Image 1 (tube, rainbow, N blue to C red):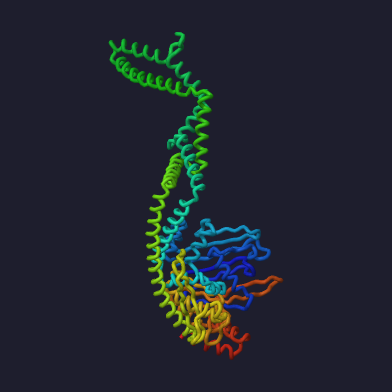
Image 2: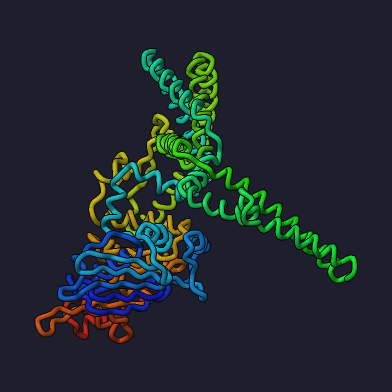
Length: 558
């Protein structure tokens, strides 16, 4: 859950440190005080886009940091996968900054991270539901996501997705195989030419590296041969019989020691040791001579090496690979395609058999997914309608429409949530039926149902109380408090009935000093909390509004 939030130089907030608790936290304040900035700061920690406009006027940069604790296992696993492990106390620190010229940075547990990694982690930490979230309810194409989440249909969806993707792959292969005859012949000729070029190159895995070594030797052969020639001369001496070489001198020394050894045993032992050394020196001399002969490159050989390397590297660039083995693998792929095209009739018949088999498997998986969705839809309708009744909307009925549709990536039906606002009326699209206040309560009812299967610990509701008041608002507050029994919930609200239900209360206020606007966030305790509830209820704090606030608070926590 979100433990703390630090905001620095973001819009009108110069500096704020906010500590969050478990349960329901109400966030209130006058319009324009900066409540939305707090939500924007949380959004930034979740990897959402921020612009340099958020940097406070006159500041060099904006900085936001948040600490999360009690991390779900899925988040810990993802952090390990991204090599961003939690701190020793199993907490998670996210930092994000943006300079006035638009340069930003992200850090997770002190390590640099990308925004995409931050977004991936953020989606598993916090769900923010606001007016923009209501718009999702107006998009029928998104309704199937809600239904699948409620039904926990991951297994059924995985089976269907695998079957559908296999079917699509086979259909694409069939389409590619059934080219018109001219295109087919052109493709055959192109494949034959490419295969011939690769075959003509006679590639051998590892050859490029060997050639690079040989080329390097060839480029320095003159210097190497000169050095080895000096070794030959030093070992064998002058070929014209002039200066004697090291080998001749060593052999003479061995003979002299052997003669001396006939009298002195120590000399005989030295002769034996020197003879052993002589064998090693003779071997070195022979290998040096062979190496000298092998390094005798000429310009023609160097040119051949360069040409061969250029051919190999040209083929690797053409096929976008980095070694000869990969080029040969591409050659086998093209050979398979060529054989398939040259025997297209038999190949197409086999593909069609596979397609029919894959289609049947996809249809079966789609039917299983549809059945699971219908079961989830029935439960969803019952649970949401029960919550709507609690929220003073007893005559509003939610129906989940599931119309058969051609198979797509999401299944074999079109899912849409319909609403009947009054008894006897047919259910219609939410977008055409629900008012702003109704939409907020419908969304809350749905979210309260989904919260049971949601593995995200922190929920943020941003002004979902738009268009409601009175008894309905009190019911919304009660429901939010219920949801907070198993989740951390933060709710931005303008209604006292909802704020009174909070386990804690944060007040966002602003002031002006020296011509600058400053915003602060205070954690309210009694009696300051009653003062704020009274302000929300009546605009002015009086004995009457304070008494009403106290009564409201007492009812909310019963």
